[in-house]
Image (cartoon, rainbow, N blue to C red; front, side, top):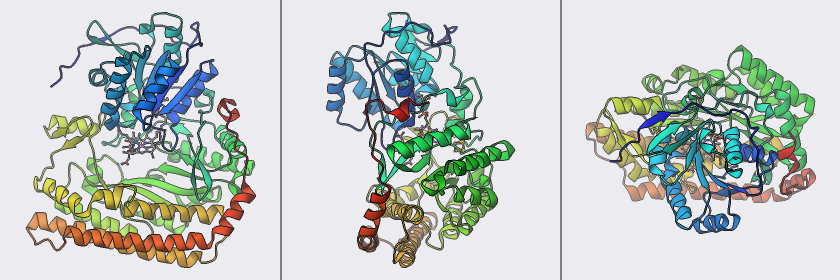
Length: 563
Ligand code: B12
Ligand code: SF4
């Protein structure tokens, strides 16, 4: 067991970014780049705007290549972005190796986990010189300014560091008040695509006003001074979309806001203005967009307006189909509201996706069966594949604190876990994961659920961004049939297993048989999907050719610097 480091709070130093700077040495930022990392993008664009050269490196790259880049660059500072808590040991090994090989710079780390669990971060990665807490744009800039000119960096607001063996905090830095004062995030990478259409992440707001117990987002934004939720001006968001469309040929935008501004009078007005701006810009005929929201924000009239302005996909964290589960997760929503939201979206022809936790710390066999029935209700027509996970108690979440208080927290930082109230549930979960091979069915790249969800996403894009394809109605019908077959099977297996472990019933399934069924579904799905896409290849390629926009990807592209 590690000793925790005693804590001391220092008064903060200067607040602004008016320090002298020497931008001759570059800055290296390392983080998870898949689907485009907006945090690193904003940090980079702010540093570049102030004259620094920045190199972003993907943490998924071969560590040897990362080390080679660091040795060649000789950066002033390396900033590690930890957005997923379970990556911390991976980062720890990398920082240690960089130090051992004599990379002479200031290593720092930012993100939710380092911000909220800064002491633990400095213990787990002792080679770090500092941790940047909360939104990092101006703290990182000031840190770089201080380091580059040999000033004392220890008075920069918004950091944690070790001083004579104690962890010391400077004054916390306030959240960025006006998000539109930030330059647009750096996006100097090839966008991901769906059927050749380019995708980019984007933000309309930061922060979340809700307080779900399993989530650290609200804790992160509440722990820093400043307004918790900040929205950008609708016209500014649309301007960024227009530039990305015109200069990079982006036609699919993924809004990564924690909770897209929709709920309540003020944000509803924001959403309506955003729709008006989109229409004024002429974008709805050319681009489509996805956003994340809660089920209680789904309103028929507003969603029809947004659909007609390009909204093509709505992600909702439904999370539970049992009232007790929703209460434990502090969703402040009812099962009925979840079902109502799904019904509205189906009735207005909007594609949706959902997050769902089959198991949480309050689970019982009854609540699991309630959850299965809820999934049957919302997915009965085979509109989407069944997906679920087990709630994990991340740092900074109220539910983790509660599990600590009741002595039920287990595992470690990389694999946080907990004891169920009914110990038989642990056996059930183990039995379930070994029987349906969750990686093969739900989470892995080859998983049935993931493949079917990708196919449904393709359908949503085909419907909105391509000419009508011959055979589309029949294709959707067969996709529904295959999805329903897969859903029925998976739900039945989970339900049967729940009785095996709760009532000692005989297990009607064996692993090989389940695996054979899974592979059969996957095979018939792939055959049907590939046949359909290849048959329409010429039409798809022609549509892509017609809409093609030259890709502008210079070193510091105009979109990144144009704000
Ligand atoms: C987009 C996103 C993704 C994208 C990732 C895209 C990418 N490359 O960044 C995708 C879809 C791939 C993804 C996947 C997953 N995600 Co996700 N995701 C998000 C989401 C919604 C937005 C991230 C974002 O863009 N934020 C906006 C930017 C501007 O903010 P930021 O990242 O916080 O960065 C700021 C500060 O934190 C700080 N900062 C950050 N890094 C650094 C570094 C330095 C050096 C400094 C100085 C400052 C600094 O400054 C930045 C600018 O102000 C977050 C929720 C959230 N609000 O963060 C969840 C979130 C990060 N995801 C989460 C999870 C759990 C997952 C999955 C495990 C889900 C799953 N079950 O599969 C997977 C994991 C993927 C994997 N590797 O295995 C959790 C992480 C929980 C945790 N504590 O670990 C979050 C917090 C959601 C939640 N409510 O709990 N995700
Ligand atoms: S889960 Fe979503 S709605 Fe709930 S607090 Fe987190 S970001 Fe907000």
